[in-house]
Length: 431
Ligand SMILES: Cc1cc2nc3c(=O)[nH]c(=O)nc-3n(C[C@H](O)[C@H](O)[C@H](O)COP(=O)(O)OP(=O)(O)OC[C@H]3O[C@@H](n4cnc5c(N)ncnc54)[C@H](O)[C@@H]3O)c2cc1C
Image 1 (cartoon, rainbow, N blue to C red):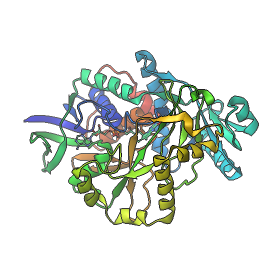
Image 2 (cartoon, rainbow, N blue to C red):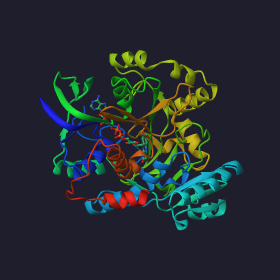
Image 3 (tube, rainbow, N blue to C red):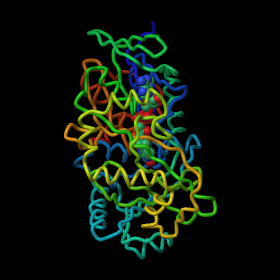
Image 4 (cartoon, helix red, strand yellow):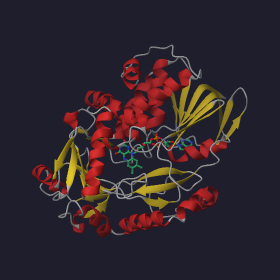
């Protein structure tokens, strides 16, 4: 039977970057397990592809996420340029549609500086200055951040995976973790195909399934989750250049952890609008509502009192029905974009883009958890609710996780394998 010091479940951007740091900084025997045949088949390839500058993140509430997003920019840039990964410096404008939202932008400006951004990277423009930059955008005011970039996180994950594999990490594909036997001195992972593996420590980075895996370790029983499908529509070639910058808007419902649909410049030159946030049953329901018998099983297993609480919240239901209508009607989705790009027309958006799904943790009072959740077992770490800007922040956040594992005595930092990123420099910058 295969034996490892550390088994990471999930070869998304998070599991892969954690494996990379472990492979360079320790001498441990490491594997990354995934149920798919390739890394980054889920959220890590099915996202908006923006490297976010953390001006919209509250440094008091989400300090690590904000820092990770800020510090990771340089790491991704180096890797993208060295490997000729698409790197489109499109910039972002976050628009306010009224004075109340303008006040939010003023707050964002302060948060951005506190999160490490330079004053030259954030410009608060009035409506005329925004029109001068983007004549087809109409708004009250907007923050222009030239530092935002569009890239391809699937390709970046693939490059990190290759570096990790060169440092002797085993990537084990087509193995779905089904059950766990947690003994005092080791953990046995039992797979869907009947095979088994022994490990001393598990790092659970299973994205939309991470809560499910944590619960197999008898952890996190007080939480449940809802999955939101983000759908995109592609602008026809003739109309993608209506606006040449990413356009986001101040969220209408700040207490909900997803943004309103935006205008996106993809790194491959395509323009899209989206994503929506349609509640769906499973973390992989990319189309329709229920795709097979397993989904029905999922429905009964994961709907509990937390989910009922949120489903009886009238604000949430209003928002969910708006998202659902945007999903079934392109006109409804475009109407939301027309609030700041009035010339966007439903007939410009015929083809669907690639949908992605985010799983949001619900607390037992029926509200959403906003930050990432790190849960430790005796010989396991579970990273749950790792949502946007998770892809942006992955390299620095993973280094932070390594430091925590070291500080808690789970690992020793004793290796110095060839490094593409500088761990010590990153840790210093994060302090
Ligand atoms: C619509 C959308 C738009 C987004 N836009 C952005 C953006 O523009 N910028 C940004 O920074 N972030 C964005 N994000 C967030 C970002 O994509 C995620 O935070 C990040 O990809 C999460 O990575 P992950 O590795 O945790 O999860 P995933 O990429 O989902 O990886 C989890 C892996 O675990 C595997 N797995 C699950 N269960 C098992 C099991 N039982 N056994 C074995 N393997 C298993 C899966 O196959 C998968 O490969 C967006 C997310 C979505 C959904």
